[in-house]
Length: 330
Image (cartoon, rainbow, N blue to C red; front, side, top):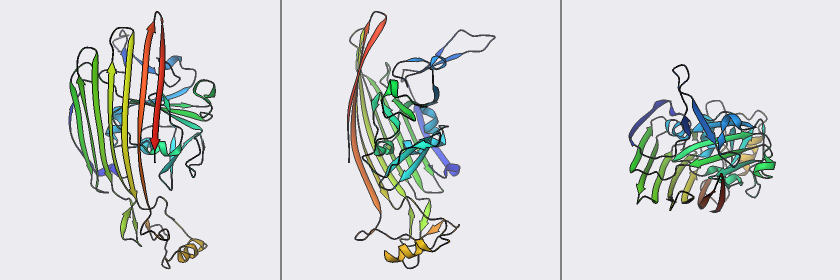
């Protein structure tokens, strides 16, 4: 989120969730080495053994930076850039390469995987980001392992899973410059020794960062709500089944792009055709924008839900994994 230099964080934190990614190794010269395990290439392996350029960021970094969606991860994740487009779509760019997000039907050349399930359309990148274990970015072509839609790279998001102990997390943040609010909460519920639940949710209301002189509003404002339920079943030492379901709602009001200059006057001519004869563009970040004909304002509303299922079956020294998912977004 832009403009969080004046943010205030008020939170309660008491977590008992398990599944920590780092594993402690024997100390060397008084130091403790941590082995980072990644799953970006479809199997768990130490980061040092991955034959690719991988960037790993822990989920706590997104909470501290007030990042509430994937299009804002550039604040804490190096090596990737997110470009917003009209209609609420997002265009990820790695090493200067990406796919146009102007059409919702286009699949991205930087594949997005959420808990192992591919989500390749531009609108999938606008979903809420909360209760995250880690985010991994793999740079370079990975088509041989991850599929044809990873010709530039891949972005893997792993959510937190139910743990063995009861615990909860809650945080609230208010940002004064834009008048934004962010609330996150999660609770871990171990039902019995073989079954556990984790419930998580997020609410964010982001204020606009630029003044629209035509409408008199600060734009673009965004309101996000999201809920997720995750269940883990481990009847024995060889079988693990994890199922999750998530629903989210995103309501944006105002324009995505504004003109910083109009040296040839062509933008003013276009605005006049749409009924705004007083269009201005300058360095003071004050703009007038024409609305779409027949509409009082420019807006975008997105809602969707996603289900994931992961089954791990241990057979001797090997583990068979089945990952399935379904998503619907409108």
